[in-house]
Length: 243
Image 1 (cartoon, rainbow, N blue to C red):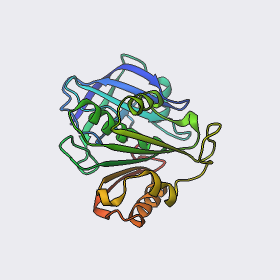
Image 2 (cartoon, rainbow, N blue to C red; image 1 turned 60 degrees about the vertical axis):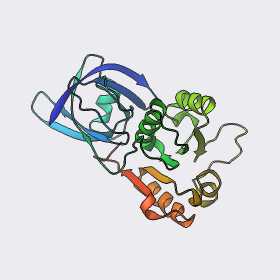
Image 3 (cartoon, one colour; image 1 turned 30 degrees about the horizontal axis):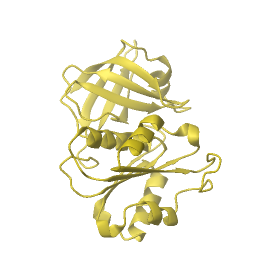
């Protein structure tokens, strides 16, 4: 079933990513970690559909936030990030997905690991955790190219500084801030072992990012003793996949 969302707010997250807030009158609500299909239709009838993770926490106001990264060769993302305006309408189908989700009734420690725009569904989980009475501790390991590529920077800093349930670790792959303790480089087993929950705590691990990143991280989590059944993954490719 396709629904119509009205754009009520737009916010730049980075130079190439924008958060779109939609008001969907008949929105059935969602669970943190789910995604939607977005359909754009041209005046000649041609349409294109892409999947995007939901960034907002579940809410009763019919508000849905999507954070979209503009892809250089993208067919849909340039329109969503550069041309979409407040008051415009786009079609949505969803929410979709029942595996890569976090529910407030979960009681185990939560490990989130994101690569680039893979932070989006994990941010929905963090926001959901912050808006409920859950007492579950979260840890986030967020890998990005450089400081300017960090999504939700101020919000993550505020939550991590204010509340002790969220610990955030950034890993920069190409350029790190001055005096950053860890030199730029990919996430490795040593970092996984040092900053993620130990396997003895039996955390549920959520990993989202490009396919190669997700496969690498999942293998490292297993090598650190985590059971494969406790590792949930979401991956995306250059076209058509989740963003």
